[in-house]
Amino acid sequence: MLSKEDQRRFEQITRHLRESDPAFYARLDHRARIRRGRWLLLMTIVLWAALPATTVLAGRLAGAIFAVVLLTNAALMWRFRQRWL
Image (tube, rainbow, N blue to C red; front, side, top):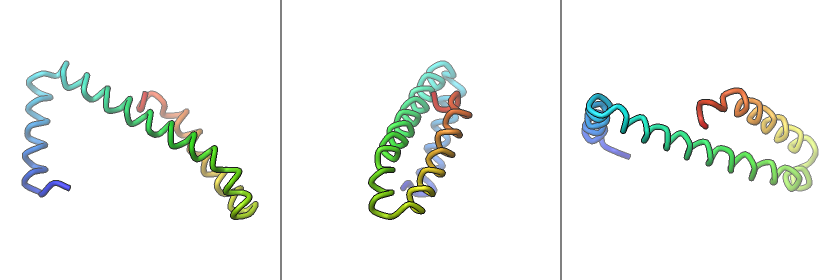
């Protein structure tokens, strides 16, 4: 974690970069969104793979809750896919 002073300075640098070279900043921002989207997709796949083990180890109710949460996650990822792709 950055201190408040360091966070303020970082935001100043970021704002200056965004204002002085918007094309460069847009490329960096796009890369960060792609990376975040890949991690989100990877975590979703891992959680779907863990669903059968969760159902066996924790019971049907826990598996059903887990499945509903994952279905909601998949629906939200599909709905907002342009934000993280």
